[in-house]
Length: 410
Image (cartoon, rainbow, N blue to C red):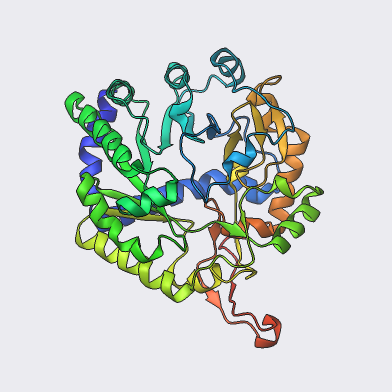
């Protein structure tokens, strides 16, 4: 624990500098390449004995009414109501693996009454919490203190608070007046608790590129400064077209569209040149203010036109299902965040029993064969090929688009 705190004290300030960020990113990328080398070489669909990480959707319930949110539709995906997996059930289903990375999302995780017991269970198992996402509105002083204690124990590392823009814009997006103020209060409670205890807890804000928030995107720097936050995470809009959904279902042998959980549209309502300008302005302002800035997926400036042109056949790869398990609130294990094909159930099996079962392995193998499923092109987990190349105009059929070169090593 002491070594971990020393690391945070030394490394965290360095990461504010651009060169240090680049060096750290390269070091992590090399480690990632080494970890996936076998999967790409053998191409069997088999993963390691256990995942490197788990994303646990602790609940799909929420206290807000966000117009753009789709996760409420996942609450009843099985066709019947199922309770959230109990702490005892989680204890039996999750492996004993010291250092396993677990991240929590929802819904709003703090709507779940036993969430602190869930977090403490994962701490007891020796896990590390990579991130926890929250809207911040349910952050009491007692809860902030508990999270700071978890950070002191070496478990809790990063809490990401979702903010869609300055005050009124955020309230409109979240569907409840006064939400921005409640979120700001909760975020400040977290910061105060971490400072008071000397806890190495990173608190950042994240926002999403949407038609409604685009004009105010660069104002997120002012929001961050006002909240005393030194890191902004940007999510590019994640979406798929109806054709991409149908193509993906055919590839994986499914028929129900509800199994694809993303924003499905023929028009995301965003002009690529405007997105490019606004994202560029946000990044520039972050650099000027020494606010750390990152975005996912890695839609570099040269890819923005294709990314925001529906139907563009982007190239890349995704190895998320080889490394991370996606566990729903009731224990259902899904292939990935977007493709909600059930590959196991922790209400009746352990995660180790599920992780390399025939259905999981077959889907992974099919993903390797295809490089990407069509709905994977605009997912936060995708690794997009960075270099666009021109394509013949005749192949575009009137659509402005670009093609991308394959990822190196494929």
